[in-house]
Amino acid sequence: MESGSHIDAEICGYQGCSRTSSAQDGHCVLHSDDTDKDPVAFRRAISEVIRAGVQQGDAAVFSGVVFPEDSFDLLAAFDRCGVSCDPRNLEIKECKFPQGILLRGSGLSELHIHGCSGSEIKIEQINARQIKLASNELDRLQISQCRVEYLFFGAYEAFNANHPQIRNVFMLHCECHRFQMSHTHIEKLHVAGCSVAAGTHINGGRHRAILIRDTSFSGPTHFEELAPNDYFVIARCPIREPRLFSIVRCDLSKAGFNGTDLTDVHFSANNWRRTGSTRVCILDHQLAIDKKPLPEFLGPYGDISLNECAETYRQLKTNFENRSNYIDAGAFHFCDLELRRLSLPRPWRWFSIYSFYRLLSGYGEQPVRATAVFAVALCILAGLHLLAGFSVGGNVVDYTLSELPRHTSHWREILQAAQLAFSHLTLRSSTSPEALATPVNTALWMFETIFGPLQLGLIALTIKRRVRR
Image (tube, rainbow, N blue to C red):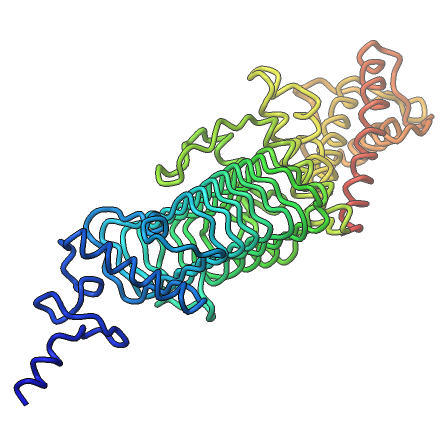
């Protein structure tokens, strides 16, 4: 019995491991929680796992391994173990990386990392058929300068609040044939300088920020069901086939698209941040107007000019008009012209054609404003005609400023002045009442014959747009 107990005590306590226990916790050098490991013994054990996987013609599987305190270059162990294995398949599951792990500079057929935890995983300069990362809990994941046919990370099951979280994910200068991210719990995803040749699918999960910069997309690309209050930035990204690029059921209240052509991108059932009945505000708009930097954890986004932001709104307006979504198209149209007005030097932004277009009709989007402006102008012009004088059936109606009618007893003269102003505003001839031949009346007539048709045209334009909606 004592002999049998002694033998049992020498076997690693990790399920499925037959190596000899070498630590006080009853585990082998691979599975011991002690991170201060004998480097020679640890590398030898790693080589044994690789050889066993190669001999079986299957993947080298590392299960439940606790890596040492220093960042460990795992793929270098393939070269050190002295066996020929092509293709190389590597599976890492339920492992711990207290100080991180490095996978660099070695060709792989498949790399599968799931259920792991630790500080960091770096994957660099790898050519692989597949890289899959699922249900890992990490401080940082960095994939850089890799060429991958299929890249996946996320979780295989539907998202829930208990999913492991990866705080920061960086994809830098990678070439992917297909890229998929599903049901992820990520604080920040940063993709820069990459290209995806065949398709991209990002859906579900919870993210604090998704930032994609200088990355080209080809083939079908779908962003779906991004959670509320996420920063979502696609900046300076060439979209090769925009009609296959879609953003669906996403919260875009903090979305930015600076430098990305959105004219033919498909938007559907998204939530935009609205600042008024006719205004939609994107992240670029807030940064261009307020000049406030993004939160520090997002990193640099670059300076955004008002004209650049206006161009994004113009593309969105064209996009939504082409899809017969005139309500949102009108909101984007309003923002486009408002930013172009604000981009002018300060004196001119109040006296430009944009300023008058906004004042008279809300950039052609507000029929109530356009009608109210016409009505107010009619009342003012009627008062001016009372001062300038007009004749009715040979009787002259002429008031001084102190004698202007203030009671209903003079309603007849007031209505006659309004009738005269209305006839001029609508370019109709009027013989009764008739303006007196004075320089003031001549100036009023010239203003009315210009302003009247213009404002009536704006009223017709705003009503047409409202009916079209």
